[in-house]
Amino acid sequence: MRCEQVFNELYGKDAEGIAFAPYRVCPIGAQVDHNLGKITGFAIDKGVNIAYRASPNGAVELNSLQFSKRAQWSVREVGEKAGDWADYLRGATLALNKAYTLSAGLCGVIEGSLPIGGLSSSAAVILAFLEALCAVNDLNLTPPELIDIAFDAEKNYVGVNLGKLDQSCEVLSVKDHLLYLDCADGSYELIPAAPAMKPFKIALFFSGLEHCLAGSKYNLRVDELRAGVYVLKALSGADYGRFGETNARDVSFEVYNEYKDCLPLPWAKRCEHWYTEFQRAEAGAEAWRRGDIEEYGRLSFESGWSSIHNWESGAPEQIKLYEIMRETDGIYGGRFSGAGFKGFCIALIDPAKAGYIQERVERAYLTAFPEMKGKYGCWLCESADGIRANGKWQRENGKGKRDN
Image (cartoon, rainbow, N blue to C red):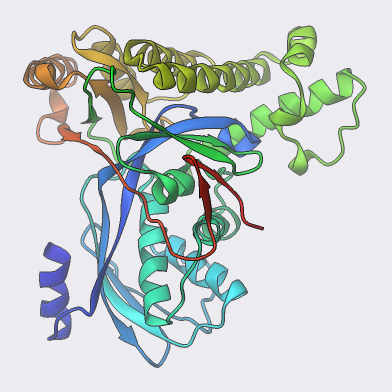
């Protein structure tokens, strides 16, 4: 790994440890976690590495192979946001400090194995950093703690109105299992690939456009959904309470159907995506349980369609990639990865047709966007284990529940 080599060059000594957190993909269940929906997803065998050594004086000094600016702060005094890539890690330091007293800092070099854009690199770098910071402070977090602290950093410090999809996939996933998570209470199931299921790989198609949720229309879309749900509560005579505490999970699909025509069209579309995506996640989990990857893939394509037309996300380049994927033999299904504001499209594919798929998608995409030559990329990967910390954690028959 380059991060080890660069660490040695910068500091004149070898790193003491390497922390790793995987990226994630969510074929069904996109843009619902922030309003307590259900999701399905995988961790993948690519992610973020941090080569690090402890700093006993509490100083944190981080270098990134993807960003030029070095970042520095203290575990005892994080300070305000700087508006740079390291805000995610400042937030992680602050969030960890709420639960534990930190004495040691670290110096480190961060290396992401893929471009930034929809694979939840932000959650991955936070989790890898937490793993390193916990190691130098002799802390051993449980999976719920890791998820909650990483979530706190991104939502409350950076200011992204996300749910816990990203952190949960990157912590709880198990190779060759589908993570089926209920974001309302954190309960989940790890559904193994059925013996009769056709083989698959995960293909990542990079549009050539990197992105970051902070500063995108992501927060606006979440607010539009929440506004629609808030009005639905009022129209149905429910106690609508405080706007910021409103969640689509609190309003039934039947209430939505009864009053949806009263909503402004953008709000109705956001609600339509949330409610139908909730249903797709439930149906997708059942299809996976049966070993029906074609049906799971069809639902993923349907999810992508709803993201374009109801959630109204996706750069033209991503939309074109999605259309090419739908027309390519051997792709079971796929969609934008993440919120769909630039970045990757992901697909579940037949491994026997991988070469054909890679060649066809690249040719069709670069014909439509020749300026992306040298920026577009495709990677094939496998599902992978997430970060599974030691501690009090209950797993029974492939199911998990929060240990409060």
